[in-house]
Image (cartoon, rainbow, N blue to C red):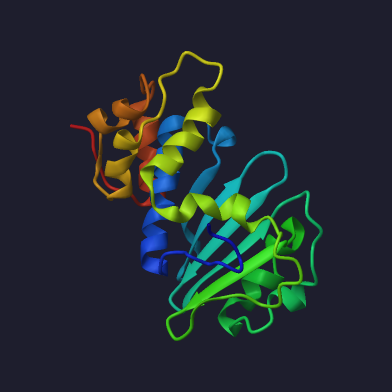
Length: 210
């Protein structure tokens, strides 16, 4: 289990690689950006990179990476929002602009976690452990099967698309360059290789489409 009070998360460098992998997998599974869950912006701000998760129904997750570490803001619509000053108590100043500015201020916050090399993963005051964090953070367990199970349900349910397998996900989790064979192991066809190449360039992930 991964949650606010059980932050069994990777260190930022490993988490960052995993976040890029999730964005790559979603880019392959969904050429239409609008229907992706996970996207990655390596140029969010100066020395800042961000993973965004949005489910289209209001739930949202942002993971900010900075030289000082990283911070996670989660919002799950069905949960009450706690006092932001309490859930961010002890937050390093390097993350203030992110947590108290936009777009977090407009999205909302039901849980917050952060990491610094000196103290590892931390959280502020948690008044209710059932804060929705487990629902959004489980994907970060590093297991290809976890993404494969989720993607099969989300992208192939009630369609004739083939299931997403852990074996097809694993090379991306291992940060291997995306080849045409690797992409076609995930989906039946890629209609626009140039579009996929552009997406991978924007994520900052290697590919070889020779």
